[in-house]
Length: 93
Image (cartoon, rainbow, N blue to C red; front, side):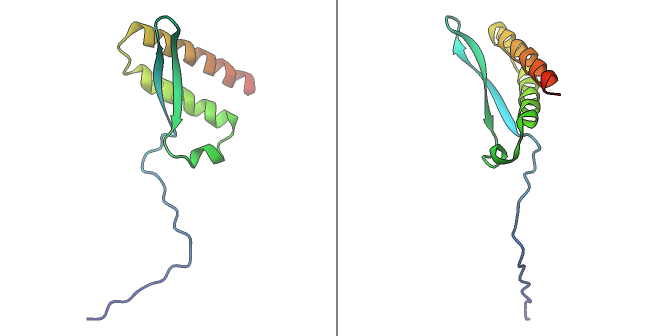
């Protein structure tokens, strides 16, 4: 039995199965204050996003984080961050 091999001259680009661009997490302590930090899920996302896309991704990541926050200090930090991000996005549009 002979197998046929098909050569593809195109570049293979893999699309991620998840549509999230960023993850958010809280850091800090009570004395210095809590804050929210963000990380790209894939490094390639940092190359092709403009400021509005980044703000929208940070808002989405913060909203997901808010669903899982248990500590009241963390919740306060995330709610404050969401308000600031939404205001910044409104000012850009």
